[in-house]
Length: 615
View 1 (tube, rainbow, N blue to C red):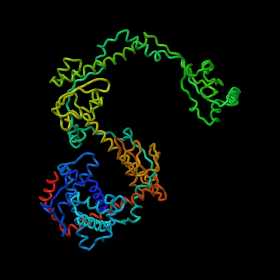
View 2: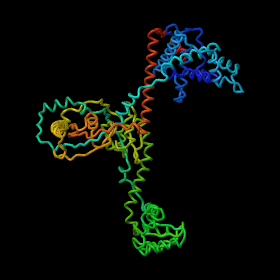
View 3: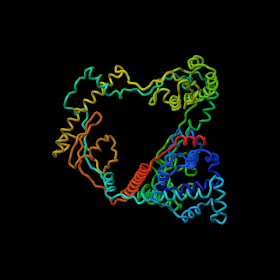
């Protein structure tokens, strides 16, 4: 519909492309004069091969501009693009046939105006230039009469389609009904009956009953597509026991991390900076005399305590203020003392004693870090040679024999995330592997490596009853319990509808309000909200849950507020959307009616000839 409505624009853009030598240069100028002249007709209006070829070329260029890659005619055929273009030219022909039938056209003035609006046809002075116009059409293999007739026909088609689709409006009642549906809210009270509320026992299932329930719910026990994968892998943790670390390396690592193992005393402090020493001293005096506390002074300065927090600091951090701060007790306010921003008061909130970890105590941590690091380097050095062995025909089993790699097997599905499947790189490789793929070395996230092979691809299939019997019994029992709870809940809902309270029925209830149809409540099934919007005020209803039953009572219905700016904005959007949808339906109906009355004839061999020429 949009193309029919904006036909003039399409031809203007087409003319611009012609004038800028982009158009047919990408595909070669096509001349159909010596072959089939038409690919079909609608009524008395023929569809020329040139019209179809140009429309298809234009669409191919548009697709190339959108995707950044050229699309061949064969690709366009396979994707259905050629059929879409054919349908469009048939639609244009149908509209043209109808404009001819009713005598609708435009005059030369309109055609001249459209031509003057094409910048590519203008001369240096910005006005229409006939020489530029003729030159552009000549390069496109067109003549002026043909091009102007195309403009005239397209303008007439646009007038016809606009008469049908423009000005489409819907009655306010339509939009108001939608807004009422969307914007109404509900208030309700609800309670849950859990398994322990059952007032009856549950039956014991027979084997035949369980088998029947299994058969009726076979989807619950159908295994997804499974890949049986053999893999060989090696991680740093697997070889740490074989990695040796020299004493010198440990000593060097301890020296490098000296600041981590030997922490000086630190203080947790807050700092309040003043403009002058006098202001700082006045504040310190007020705090010392208990006239005000530190929080009050901070608040009077228009600050929050978080603005004064310095975290934990060392003596070196504080400079000249270090001595008073590190001599104070927790809770003391000291100062005025210097800071890089001016005189300040400091409050001590905590003391973190110095921590010294001797070399001997740090050795285990140092060794673990160095060993893992060296293990990663060892694996990194092995990866290339192992990959070469795989490329040379070595199997995963042979790798496991000849190297430190460990062999394993996994039944992998898209939800498997244990063991080696906990690594993202393995999951990606397992998802992509196909039968016949050769194993190759890939990296794990922790510095390890792996290679895998697909041994078997199992299609989705039900798990045997014997393997899942316990789960079948568990689910069967849960269903029986839910059914019994729902029966109890229905009895309670009846009593609540007759003016009993939730409390009178021994229920601990919760209340909700202001909920629309789009609301979601944590822990409540969607069926509760669906029921609420299907109930009358005061009505109570039982709702099935997952292993439980719920009792819901609708307390109040709040109509939509039509004066709410958001509702009005939504109403405008719905009105425009619905009008656009109706416009499209009207245009499709018009097009179908014209084609039905006039009749369509398509020569498929001529269409194929055009496509073959454009290959």
